[in-house]
Length: 321
Image 1: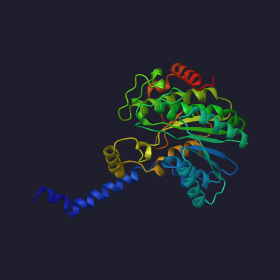
Image 2: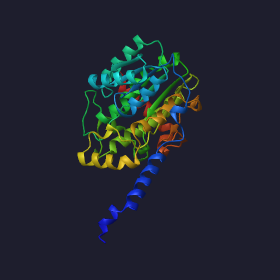
Image 3: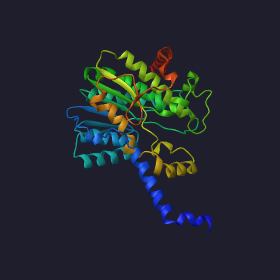
Image 4: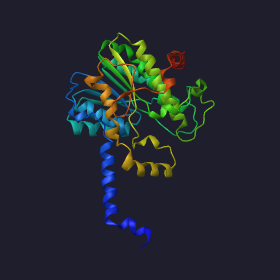
């Protein structure tokens, strides 16, 4: 018998199908959003990057719970499509699109100014928008484009909306990071695109480490305000975050991901958990894994002195001179 005949054996096919099913079942965490009875009627939530992937499913969940949801998206066309889909699926007409390019500090300021004028309250902010695999590009603000998109833009947005969230307390800030932060390094010259290696996800990993560091420092500064800030790992998820990678890498990732990685809907669960679960009430400055467990991040992410320095540098870089 030729060895290739093994792949046509009924037992091989059956065992492979069973294994794939078991793996897919195990991808789901212990917390199920559908079993959570929390309602968000009268609450306002902003989700960045809500036109696709994880962000869209987070916004969809909030809308189903009756929240006023603001989709913060860069693309008018894709944002409008997501808006119509969410309204249709949830029956919630109080879902709105506001345009923002988080890689541009001016765009972030304009977006925040509009929110402060239009909204009376803000109870949930989910910093979801991110990119990976971008080539070297410096924004008009003099910042590396990946750092601007993944960290400095969301950092500025969060700080501009803090007073509104304090007035709306209790409120929650959720920033999507990644388990890849453990491979990240802190070098403040990276913010300006210096001393960076742009191979694969190296820059992405650095930005995700800064996400956790600054979220922890933000949580410390917000103690006693009723506003919590936590970071979360969504899991390894088949989303468009790899759209800047070579076609071969994307194909392999999606092929393997069909069996082993989370779908965007599954990847949204840990963020939804941090944003509304009763178990997270009053919890702040923590890092939540993709199974909705509070775990310790990398040692660098727990360095309090480094966090103060990182936060202050980010404040200076995003300040309007």
